[in-house]
Image (cartoon, one colour):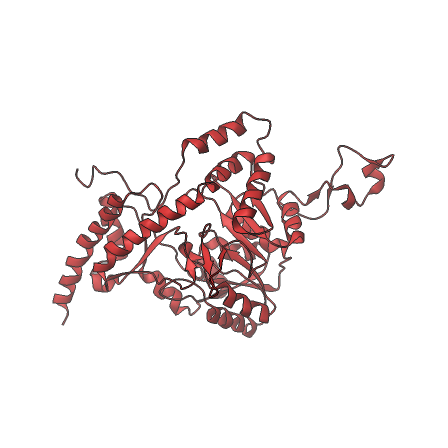
Length: 416
């Protein structure tokens, strides 16, 4: 079969089975389409799976980030520390609250913010007269940051911690004593945020969630996602309008603060719950595919290397990212991506450093972030999803070898 005749390999995609379809069909045939039993069932299952006491679903990962910041009363005049290598939504959540963003640098070989980067960003925020209030560490591609070290720095400076784990459902932190902690347990954070976009490890169509150990935060998150409305009679302020002969009026509710409609439907949660039941299987497949990539790509070093693995983390790989020395390879990233696309292999870049975006450049000017820039210049995300086979991985790696090594050899010969 020619390269053009082979199926296209996207960089990521969902895996929907008949049981997922049946779960959604059952909701469509039932009495609830919006916030009903499927929402409650998914939230309970997610809390149990992560080890958190509470899980609050919402419309998507961006909404989850925004809700988490709102629940902590983030205000104008305060600042949020965000790693430079992430999707724009991480930083935008702070701006939507009117707060400032201070970008932290990252490790150039993993893309992860480390405790030292956080310390430097806090110092920079204070140098600029800002009041740092929250840090949003990002678990990039499925690898988790060192949350114990990050939390130690954050708490020493009075910062709250919200983990952006939109890439990391199913990832596990491994501790020196041999214990393991699922990402989302909030052992070292106030809240953890997830995304269930179709290219993530489990899909809800669109969807997000926040986990927390704090019952007051969970209550506030639920209120904020539903217009700031309460229906709990113990919270009603207008007792005259709310009650008739000591019985609450059936139509009555109160809006106690400004909220949003960030709810997730039963349709989405039925799919998410069905997918969550398969999370362990999905993670095993993704880890096996990543291990195959590791083995097949080893001969391409040093032109192409895998991103640095962090000790103490068992990733549930959302992305398989590599670092390519494009100068040594004698090809630009854009040309390599086009060459791979011509062979039915689609790749992506995760991410353009957020402070390089025009909105943030205009707001804060140019920021010196050498680690983020070094990571960005070299990174490329290869196809990785549950439906891939070992032959698909070999197809990708064979193409990379054929497209990179001859050019690299020619570049070396031409060097003075």
